[in-house]
Length: 300
Image (cartoon, rainbow, N blue to C red; front, top):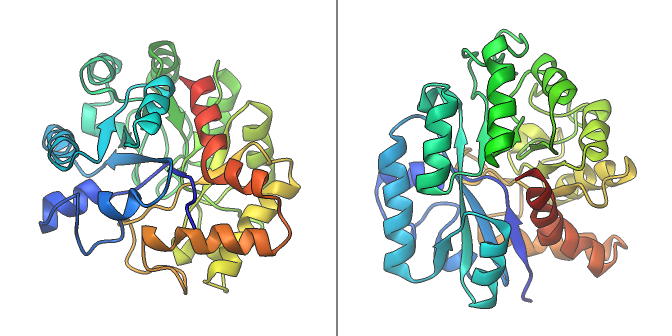
């Protein structure tokens, strides 16, 4: 079964750079060969943990060498890649400390590398904001200036690692839709601080943004299987998220996967499970591809 797939977050370029192998074919959770089985296919490749320039160079080199994908700077470029049968690859940054929390460096990366989405922080507070995994503070004054500068540049703001206070501070000043690329529902799994409350998800819906389903078992709750993945999607749908929920699997950013999922080659199992649970194919296609395309077009 050929399915469309556009995913908002993976850590595969870090895995390849640090542990070896190829982005085209490897034993990790995602590679270009397996991703290309989806049609159309698009994927955000996140840079985290430093070595920004090396990781961007690796992504460029592997895409060119494999011939399987194109590094895209915009949604129109992604549509062109899809028409050519290529993976649309996008670049994101997870933690702006990698670029010195600098709006100027962000603009340079946007112009030079096509960077179009950033997490303000990772798992530690920085000079822009508080992290969900650290002190929990909000946007600093520098962070407020940065958010507005990023949106003016055409770079989407990702709040998946932001504290709840940072989340609401961003929502107060944001001039464009924002998203949480890999966060699930706190109503179904409150043990993990990066999941979203119903109020947070509803705010994302209202601003024209959305949230991506994270496959990490710790984000799913007691049931760690395909059914749990569907339940998080369905909870967001019940909050008005038909055009706001998408995929944000975080492949190669975790040690374990839900039962029944071995990597990107298994995502069609979630697609098929949603169909069996009575959801229309149009809705499931939106969740797996169209919603994120539309949100990014509005956010950038």
